[in-house]
Image 1 (tube, one colour):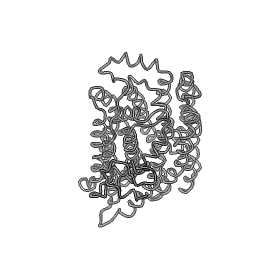
Image 2 (cartoon, one colour):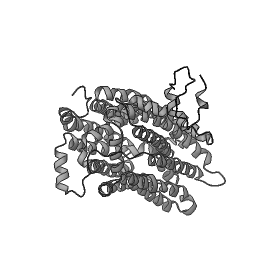
Image 3 (cartoon, one colour):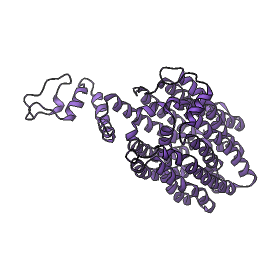
Image 4 (spheres, helix red, strand yellow):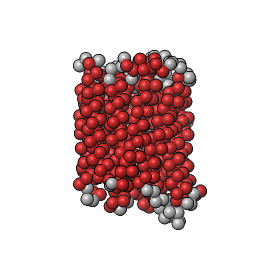
Length: 481
């Protein structure tokens, strides 16, 4: 049998000299047609994506069309590079502000303004989506384009603003614009994903996709902390390390944008409404069992999260003098633990359903803030992050799946916008409350309030959302229904 790599790329007739009787292996048929010997880089690319395509196909309950495989492939790559970008900046914007001397109150405003801008953007994003034939350009130009340009703005802050207070204000505003543009794209992004990923394979696909994203986060978070420590003070530039990671965040973020742009936009099975009156959407939502309960319980849950969430790293810096490099390593511990969480909960969600995963992980997460009451050294946070990373992996996986299942198809963009508005409203109030209480009373109080609030939120979810959803067959495997 001759070497299949020697087959010309235009060859279309059976190989009569083959001892397979003219048959060629699946690998031959799928790759040799794409090999261009005049451009060997094409071979390298297809050799790279072939295992990814095969992995995607194995996760499907029934055969996928070529366009579906292509879309799921590029959505996978988009997730990896988006995660790399986020881990270069998401945990370090607050530290960047602290490097300029930001107070707890200013840190609270940094988070609150970003969340407020994100909330404001959601309904305009849904309305724009309803007026356009295509959803992908909305995502690419806003969340993938303008939002990531703000990372360049953060990198240039030390060049143009020498006064610390003006620099802090610029950081708050740039982060706010980034959040606005990112969330403007959220309804369109969610709508595309709902049509792109078949329901029967969501647990396996998102579990494995999130697993690779977790590997990326595991590497990038400590790398970012190391680059900050190494870069700050280089050539007399006090904040050069931060500038470097923001530039890297922009570069990898644009690769994510290019990957998403390669996704063939799937056809939506339900025509999107155009300018329907507000009363009609609420009628549709009332007929969607469990969705309004999800919105209400998510408000309480996220309010509790945001009261303490922005201040855990601030607590480490202010109370223990923890460096950015150490904070990056602690984030890596959480990412490593999340890898195992993705594997476990991804399989569990396909077997037992998203409701089961949401309840189990949601009941385990409220204990985390109470552990912070007993921290006396930064290394002890490793134990907290091991537990937290594992459980948050399950919660994030199930929460997104439930959002896709519980939102009505005919009003998904607006329903997602309503859900995200409740989340961001809580995320605006939480940091302001937490920042005030941290300055006036101390960090321990906000840790206690966060734990109690999380417990109330998950109990509300069980009573208001899980029950109605289960009775309607949502959030549980089809074979159970």
